[in-house]
Image 1 (cartoon, rainbow, N blue to C red):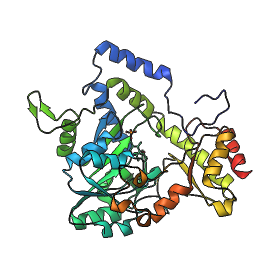
Image 2 (spheres, rainbow, N blue to C red):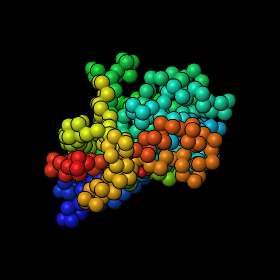
Image 3 (cartoon, rainbow, N blue to C red):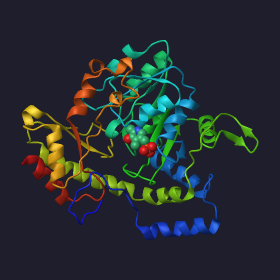
Length: 383
Ligand SMILES: *Cc1c(COP(=O)(O)O)cnc(C)c1O
């Protein structure tokens, strides 16, 4: 994170101006209400609903517990179809519910679970699908939701990367007002978000679970508070995953800055794309028609034969030049020891995901990155 040594970091947290945050701290100190559904917790939920154009959100202390709680709230049993090309928390949440993950290969155009391959993985024990909007690229939500309907499956979208992503509207009934697009969070049974320090929008640690009914929101609120319905009633073995007032207030302040941050990221991504388009053996995603992207990551894929050196060699070269990139996602979740013995984890079942994991590098991208930084990265890749 220290610029004095001339290092370019892969990420850097979105921090609001300190002077904007201090009055909130004063208010929290004065009130002596520091957690347990305080005013900033409630205000953050309201502000996020307005920002996204959604009806129900429950904020959490991180982005993993909403995944775990979602499966519990939806009473998911047996097998859950998911993607190996994600952060390990996605599959961990399935494990924590005593369920079996079933890995399905991804689509090379997006990095997301391939809807064409989902049907073949459905068995009588399948009860849910847990796709991920990887890098903020929206999944084929229409097809996934249709498959779920056909087979009576729940859909839990891990939208940890998809803060602020909007897709063109095909179902006007989902719209809020006059928008021609809608939040990606309006699909599936529920979606989860992460507000971790490395994400586009952050509450330091934090996350949320988005749902579509007041009953589900109530259930989730109980589950994130030990299962308490009231002082003397526990409805289920819930966990403690409430966010505190300090981080909720931090989130309220940061929400005012996230659109500027996304705009800056967009400019940096355009500069990367412009600089990389002539380089043989380096490919990257383009924007999808009608989608409001959030530019949360800039993954590139290295074809060793065409580019001349391997992905790992480029990764090391960048590092030697003071540029910290990240092999994200590598290794695949299906390669980690808790999961590699599953039948669906074998490489032959996941050729596209394996190829992506072996060729990907996420380049530095954050709200503090400068044009000069991008040029330094580009020059290093070009040399
Ligand atoms: C970051 C992330 C999570 C976990 O979020 P935390 O807030 O770190 O617990 C889950 N899924 C994906 C895809 C992520 O990138």
